[in-house]
Length: 238
Ligand SMILES: [Zn+2]
Image (tube, rainbow, N blue to C red; front, side, top):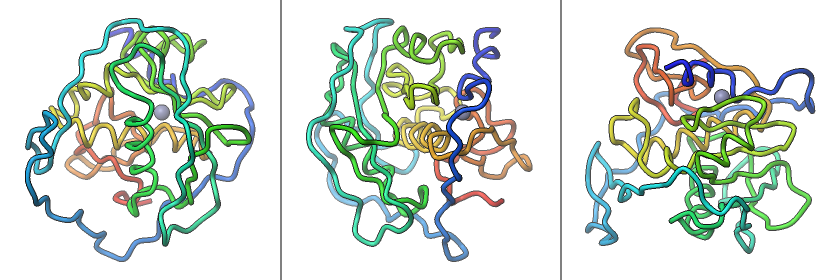
């Protein structure tokens, strides 16, 4: 547990980093819209239904993979109707992981373009300039990319000096214990949380009251502090 506790600050860089004006949450009507009901047949790719939605097949990830990143090719435009500043970002996947750059990039772009997400127009690119990278990384590479903060292989981080969101592929593949098997929602959470750091939300939030949705900037991989899991920036007050 010490390793987990030591990871508590792992999303934050020490000292002054590039200062950015934080990107706000989407302005939503009250109450926030519910996601559409899940309908249709099973995707047929090993997905299963749990927690009220289709879940991806769990993926096992070894401690280490190839150690080098492959960039997802091509570009993806912001969804129609998105508002806020244009934010260019790049997606990478470590060589040798059992998840393709194309598939990971599609999931990341869907999360960032969701109306419940951060209020920006996210454009995926495959070359500079870009504001930050989202990089799926084995536990070992996550540790290296997050140094000097030690994740112990059990967390993801945003390293502002590298402008890199290192997403721990083992957690991506199986979810975190705090999400109790809801892998799909956990993936949404970890992207929104680490990209939140990239957008200028440097600090971590606390659970306001037990039973309420956890603000997305709570370190929900480690503890919910009595709150309920919540992947979305728009579904929290304050
Ligand atoms: Zn964090």
